[in-house]
Image (cartoon, rainbow, N blue to C red):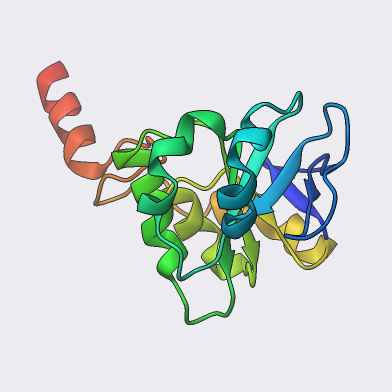
Length: 168
Protein backbone atom coordinates (compact mmCIF):
# COMPACT_ATOMS: atom_id res chain seq x y z
CA UNK A 1 0.00 0.00 0.00
CA UNK A 2 1.33 3.46 -0.84
CA UNK A 3 2.14 5.76 2.07
CA UNK A 4 1.65 9.52 1.71
CA UNK A 5 3.79 11.67 3.97
CA UNK A 6 4.54 15.38 3.60
CA UNK A 7 2.50 15.38 0.41
CA UNK A 8 4.55 12.70 -1.36
CA UNK A 9 4.48 8.95 -1.71
CA UNK A 10 7.30 7.49 0.39
CA UNK A 11 8.70 4.07 1.22
CA UNK A 12 7.28 2.80 4.49
CA UNK A 13 10.16 1.76 6.73
CA UNK A 14 7.84 0.68 9.57
CA UNK A 15 7.06 -3.01 10.17
CA UNK A 16 3.70 -3.96 11.66
CA UNK A 17 4.23 -6.79 14.15
CA UNK A 18 1.35 -9.10 15.09
CA UNK A 19 0.54 -9.59 18.75
CA UNK A 20 2.15 -13.03 18.89
CA UNK A 21 5.01 -12.47 16.39
CA UNK A 22 8.67 -12.03 17.26
CA UNK A 23 9.94 -8.45 17.19
CA UNK A 24 12.64 -7.78 14.58
CA UNK A 25 16.06 -7.10 16.03
CA UNK A 26 18.16 -4.00 15.73
CA UNK A 27 16.71 -0.59 15.13
CA UNK A 28 13.88 -1.62 12.77
CA UNK A 29 10.88 0.67 13.43
CA UNK A 30 7.91 -1.41 14.62
CA UNK A 31 4.18 -0.84 14.99
CA UNK A 32 2.33 -2.94 17.56
CA UNK A 33 -1.30 -3.06 18.62
CA UNK A 34 -2.55 -1.97 22.04
CA UNK A 35 -2.60 -5.51 23.44
CA UNK A 36 1.03 -6.08 22.44
CA UNK A 37 2.03 -2.70 23.89
CA UNK A 38 0.40 -3.57 27.21
CA UNK A 39 1.99 -7.03 27.31
CA UNK A 40 5.52 -5.93 26.32
CA UNK A 41 5.59 -2.25 27.28
CA UNK A 42 8.93 -2.25 29.11
CA UNK A 43 10.72 -4.28 26.41
CA UNK A 44 9.30 -2.03 23.69
CA UNK A 45 10.43 1.11 25.50
CA UNK A 46 13.94 -0.35 25.84
CA UNK A 47 14.20 -1.24 22.11
CA UNK A 48 16.93 0.38 20.04
CA UNK A 49 14.53 1.28 17.22
CA UNK A 50 11.48 3.52 17.02
CA UNK A 51 8.15 2.18 18.31
CA UNK A 52 4.67 2.94 17.07
CA UNK A 53 1.26 1.84 18.20
CA UNK A 54 -1.84 1.03 16.18
CA UNK A 55 -5.20 1.77 17.75
CA UNK A 56 -8.43 0.20 16.55
CA UNK A 57 -11.31 2.64 16.19
CA UNK A 58 -12.86 1.53 19.51
CA UNK A 59 -9.62 2.14 21.44
CA UNK A 60 -9.32 5.55 23.03
CA UNK A 61 -6.53 8.12 23.15
CA UNK A 62 -6.70 8.00 26.94
CA UNK A 63 -5.49 4.39 26.83
CA UNK A 64 -2.04 5.48 25.59
CA UNK A 65 -1.88 9.03 26.97
CA UNK A 66 0.69 8.23 29.66
CA UNK A 67 2.96 6.57 27.10
CA UNK A 68 2.88 9.23 24.37
CA UNK A 69 6.48 10.21 25.11
CA UNK A 70 7.65 6.68 24.27
CA UNK A 71 5.92 6.52 20.88
CA UNK A 72 7.27 7.79 17.58
CA UNK A 73 4.13 6.94 15.60
CA UNK A 74 0.47 6.31 16.29
CA UNK A 75 -1.57 4.63 13.54
CA UNK A 76 -5.32 5.14 13.84
CA UNK A 77 -7.62 2.72 12.10
CA UNK A 78 -10.55 3.65 9.87
CA UNK A 79 -12.32 0.28 9.50
CA UNK A 80 -15.09 1.62 7.23
CA UNK A 81 -16.30 4.86 5.67
CA UNK A 82 -18.96 5.58 8.28
CA UNK A 83 -16.69 5.05 11.31
CA UNK A 84 -15.08 8.39 12.14
CA UNK A 85 -13.95 7.77 15.72
CA UNK A 86 -10.30 8.11 14.67
CA UNK A 87 -10.90 11.80 13.87
CA UNK A 88 -11.68 12.47 17.52
CA UNK A 89 -8.79 10.33 18.69
CA UNK A 90 -6.41 12.23 16.41
CA UNK A 91 -7.48 15.61 17.76
CA UNK A 92 -7.19 14.40 21.33
CA UNK A 93 -3.71 13.02 20.73
CA UNK A 94 -2.51 16.28 19.16
CA UNK A 95 -4.37 18.89 21.19
CA UNK A 96 -4.93 17.39 24.65
CA UNK A 97 -2.00 15.01 24.96
CA UNK A 98 0.57 16.91 22.88
CA UNK A 99 1.62 14.04 20.62
CA UNK A 100 4.16 15.37 18.10
CA UNK A 101 5.17 12.14 16.34
CA UNK A 102 3.76 10.73 13.12
CA UNK A 103 -0.01 10.33 13.18
CA UNK A 104 -0.95 7.83 10.49
CA UNK A 105 -4.39 7.06 9.04
CA UNK A 106 -4.74 3.37 8.14
CA UNK A 107 -7.51 1.13 6.90
CA UNK A 108 -10.30 2.55 4.78
CA UNK A 109 -8.55 5.85 3.96
CA UNK A 110 -10.40 7.63 1.15
CA UNK A 111 -9.44 10.71 -0.86
CA UNK A 112 -12.62 12.58 0.06
CA UNK A 113 -11.48 12.38 3.69
CA UNK A 114 -7.83 13.49 3.24
CA UNK A 115 -8.58 17.10 4.03
CA UNK A 116 -10.62 16.31 7.14
CA UNK A 117 -7.95 13.89 8.35
CA UNK A 118 -5.26 16.51 7.84
CA UNK A 119 -7.29 19.10 9.71
CA UNK A 120 -7.52 16.71 12.67
CA UNK A 121 -3.75 16.27 12.85
CA UNK A 122 -2.90 13.32 10.60
CA UNK A 123 0.35 13.72 8.69
CA UNK A 124 0.66 10.29 7.04
CA UNK A 125 -1.88 8.22 5.13
CA UNK A 126 -1.83 4.59 4.03
CA UNK A 127 -3.89 4.48 0.84
CA UNK A 128 -5.15 1.66 -1.35
CA UNK A 129 -3.32 2.52 -4.58
CA UNK A 130 -1.25 5.04 -6.53
CA UNK A 131 -4.36 6.74 -7.92
CA UNK A 132 -5.40 7.73 -4.38
CA UNK A 133 -1.88 8.92 -3.66
CA UNK A 134 -1.84 11.05 -6.82
CA UNK A 135 -5.07 12.78 -5.71
CA UNK A 136 -3.46 14.07 -2.50
CA UNK A 137 -2.15 17.42 -3.79
CA UNK A 138 -5.34 18.25 -5.65
CA UNK A 139 -7.48 17.56 -2.59
CA UNK A 140 -5.23 19.54 -0.25
CA UNK A 141 -5.25 22.60 -2.53
CA UNK A 142 -9.05 22.71 -2.80
CA UNK A 143 -9.58 25.06 0.17
CA UNK A 144 -7.54 27.92 1.56
CA UNK A 145 -9.84 29.44 4.22
CA UNK A 146 -11.27 27.71 7.29
CA UNK A 147 -13.96 28.73 9.74
CA UNK A 148 -12.79 26.69 12.71
CA UNK A 149 -9.43 26.12 14.38
CA UNK A 150 -7.99 22.60 14.31
CA UNK A 151 -4.81 20.65 14.87
CA UNK A 152 -3.20 21.39 11.49
CA UNK A 153 -2.20 24.90 12.54
CA UNK A 154 -3.67 26.75 9.55
CA UNK A 155 -5.01 30.23 10.21
CA UNK A 156 -8.77 30.29 10.41
CA UNK A 157 -11.01 33.03 8.98
CA UNK A 158 -11.66 35.08 12.16
CA UNK A 159 -7.91 35.23 12.93
CA UNK A 160 -7.13 36.22 9.35
CA UNK A 161 -9.70 39.03 9.59
CA UNK A 162 -8.28 40.24 12.93
CA UNK A 163 -4.75 40.35 11.51
CA UNK A 164 -5.95 42.20 8.42
CA UNK A 165 -7.90 44.76 10.48
CA UNK A 166 -4.96 45.28 12.86
CA UNK A 167 -2.64 45.94 9.91
CA UNK A 168 -4.95 48.59 8.42
